[in-house]
Length: 357
Image (cartoon, rainbow, N blue to C red):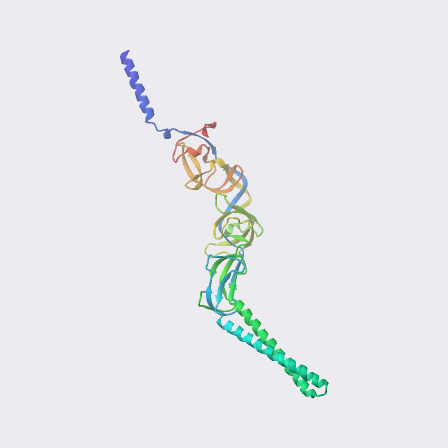
């Protein structure tokens, strides 16, 4: 009996040691699973693009001259009335000073001629001067009046030109390009800055030729700031280039965004367009998790019952499901519950009970 007890004790110790040497991570974890299947539905087509201004305007001086100062740079935000640049106004100010002096001289001369014309007219009424002298005085008064009007016109022109030496923004927006620097001579109407107005934004995409038949101006789409569906807005396609890009064979497509909200200019966006019904892959939202920062699913290897994280491209999120655009094939088996605690290559045990949660 004593020998039997010793043997049993040894076996018990071996069993305990064996259990202690078996890592918990090697035990199959219970999960729920499903076999990926095709179904008919609207498969979203994804287009990657960028946010751009709906309208761009060129800011240019109305007169020619040398740029004395530039007050804004590319990337600066501007509002209506913001001074963008200034021309050298030395010549214009001299012209204005001269025109003001001419006006003052003409006004003084006109006052003298007015008094003279009135005096001669009274004398002519009293038959004290000849008709010829009266007419000459009247002509002189009219000539001086014309000289005053001409001087005033020159003053007005000089004042306008002085105002035009200041280039101001006519809209709210962002300076996206500059075409001239301080010290350069520019002509009237020559663009100095390009401004992207910020009252409306576009999403600009390169559309593949295969979608030309399906997409037309007026087609609605959804535009999201990122693939995780964090910031989205409805948009409407309004322009499709009639010519393909020579190198990419794609067609530039523009859609105006209804509510750009937090979508900054230049940001990368994903456009989702629902095409006519076709075979799609739809999986539960719970099956999708983030792995290395990308939407992924656990794919089960049938022969080893081990899992591998596989990135997928999400076409559309619905209330409780995800439509997969790329990354899964029909017939593959994926984890639908219990995947949060899994690790790469871990062995699993499929179950229908709640122990997988």
